[in-house]
Amino acid sequence: MLKQNDRLIILLANMSPSAQKVQLNVPHGQYTIRQLNHDNAIEAMTNPEGYRIAKGQKLDITSATSSLTLSPYEYVRLQQE
Image 1 (cartoon, rainbow, N blue to C red):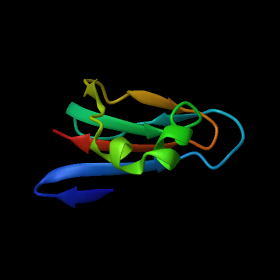
Image 2: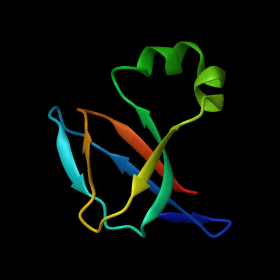
Image 3: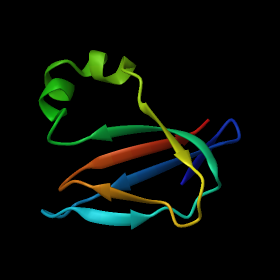
Image 4: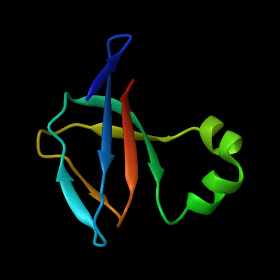
């Protein structure tokens, strides 16, 4: 976990060949999620500038039992809004 301008940033990585479910024990609220996985890896490698400026999706964490499933070898960045 990192903090930038009083906003929490969580970096997650699944380094295994199978999907992994992760329990999110973070403060409730709005987050932006950016994912790097098999769906967008080619785009990120061939157009890194375009990948970096693309906006992430909004994620509303409302429960202490919120979870996220990471695809094989997926990298995720959650940023508190």
